[in-house]
Amino acid sequence: MEKLFSTEDVHRRDRFSYWHEVACETLVPHESTPDDQVSFSAMMCTGKIGTLDLISFENTAMYVSRTRLNCNRYDNDDLFFCQQLNGNLEIDQAGRRAVLAKGDMVLIDPLLPYHGHFGSGSKLLVLKLGRQDLRARMGSTDAFVGLSSSAGKDGAHGQVAEFLATLPRWAGNIDAPTSEIMQTFCVDLVANAIGQFAGANLPHVSSTRASTLMAVRMATERRIQDPDLTPAKIAASLGITVRYANLLLATEGTSLSRLVLSRRLERCRLALDDPSQTNRTLSDIAYGWGFSDMTHFSRTFKAAFGMLPSAYRRMAVTKSLRDSDPV
Image: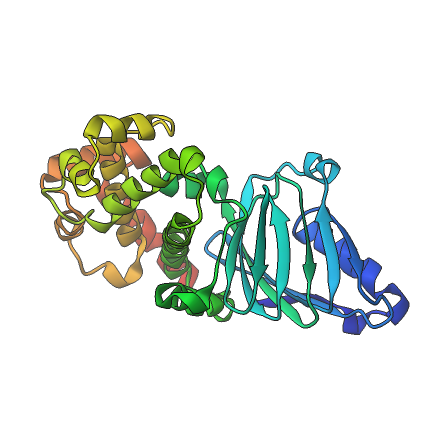
């Protein structure tokens, strides 16, 4: 992570205005007011894991709000997955109130208004996730916005929080293929975490479809390596019918069969991109991710990515050698 801004480098009278300008440009346009403008201090660092933007910022106490007018000025389609690294944050969005202490997490939608208060000594890590990346894993995210998880109340959540807190040290310090693999894992992990900690808090009527869709995607991901995996087995493991699962997935333009295929192809693509897996044959990779027919694998891979797996690997190897060339 690289330091983007620190009030230590700015005259005391200008600190907050400079901070607000940088924060609006880097994160989203918003309104904010410090509890004490004279003693206000803040620092912001940024980095990347693949194309995943990471932003961490530390600040003294202040109020923040994002108005409808602010939202209308924002044309990005990211969602913010926030983890409190230190101090506390209270934030209200979509009729829900999240009170975050160290390790707690919440999903924020910058297209919707919110307001909140950072406590003194707050440090927050923000992962800017593509809305479509999350939708590909969990369907509509509307039912999950503003819901928070207390890491201290659940061991699994605590482990997720511990891992996410290490991301800043990896940003900029790993090669491109590893960074891309870690990015995919991070999005998978976040989607899984949101689904789990939201499960107990979601209102039943409005969110049943969303939570079931999330469960379908998670069940598919867990068994993606099984060559005998079928839509019927996925549906049966969740106690629903294939028809109902497909109706849910149709809202995202896919089906159980297409979901299984697309996830297998993406896992194979990442393996072909990875320099540490150049010793593996194409068939080893394909069979390892659940394919049982190489002709089918090659044909569907080309349809998805525009070239045969062998050509994709050659391109990936060439790029890796070029990137590692010190000249």
